[in-house]
Image (cartoon, rainbow, N blue to C red):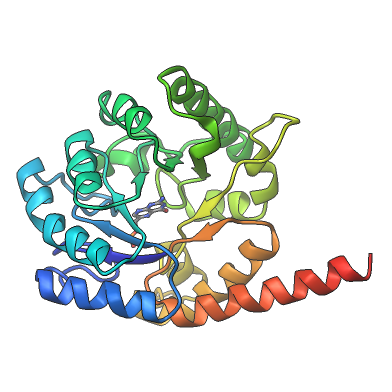
Length: 274
Ligand code: PMM
């Protein structure tokens, strides 16, 4: 999944794709680099970000979703608002990526249920402005699994087919770096959400996030800039794919797509010698 943030203030690429023509060209380029899905968002969710109005969000993403869908790409809309999701689906989007897991807008679950499209359910504890104050866990993996399982149950009760749900541990959403690493190391457990049945597909959104810059900080403790965290993102992509992740959401696609292909071949070999 390649990211097109049509925002002035996203974490690593804010302002780069704010003009519709630039965003559309970027989406097409990401698809040409190997992205199977293009995720278009018009509201930054970086820690501390303030919300944009619904009108602004719609204005940002409308032409981009339409153009990319018309070009034949599978477009996902990254939004917490049911109205925005509805208009994006009408414009040709085929999937809803809601970082609030349906908590931000009570109208989201009925909309997605009626639309019958794949829905990304992300672990989330509150809006970006103060989410890091909620990064408090005794056992982060157990708590994220329990909270995600609750969301999945509530969303299923609201009519969304569980077979269309994709779960996401919400890397960086009310999480400190140590929390992110614990979750990434337990992706397989997260896919089962504590049930013995079939696993859910898992999406991982770790690309260029702050915890990578902190891991790769200089000797003086200066975090590595976002744009220089793409190699670390590729390493995480390979590990996530090897752990069975269904999708990785990344800003720079080509090397991540290569990593996914390497892991697929690696897994094929492992299967054949069993
Ligand atoms: N992260 C961001 C935005 N959307 N969607 C999902 N499903 N998972 C994520 O982790 C996620 C997301 C924020 O990242 P960005 O501002 O760097 O794009």
